[in-house]
Amino acid sequence: MDSTSNLEKGDRAELQRQQRASDAHGRSGDVDSVVPITSTRYAINKLKLPVKTAWRPWSINDEVGGYVEEYEGLTLVTVRDAGHLVPSYQPARALTMISSFLQGVLPPPKQYL
Image (cartoon, rainbow, N blue to C red; front, top):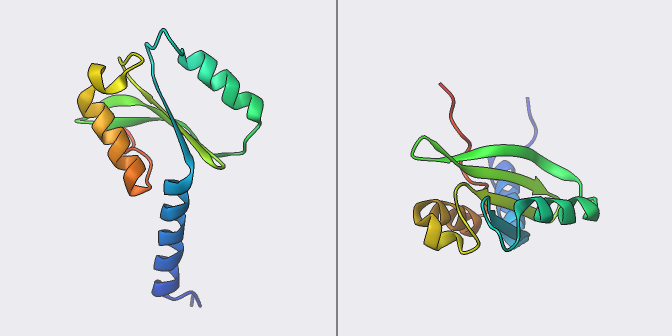
């Protein structure tokens, strides 16, 4: 029997959520000509941060909304078909990205059938 109570597990989950919410959050449109995603990923790789969650697609309305990778202290989220001013290019995807950040969670994963 697990000696960790449900309350302790809940507290741990809340602590992890709060930690995510306090981390830095980078975002990039994948067609951004001002700050290309390749430059952003290059700069992040130079920091040599440990990866917590590997590069994966996230979704909105059963479509790939972009990609996300979580590092220790930093989360990078890309938004598909968005330029430098992400909300003006992809408002629904931007809302999903920002809502996830404010909730302290990663954007929802792509569901494959």
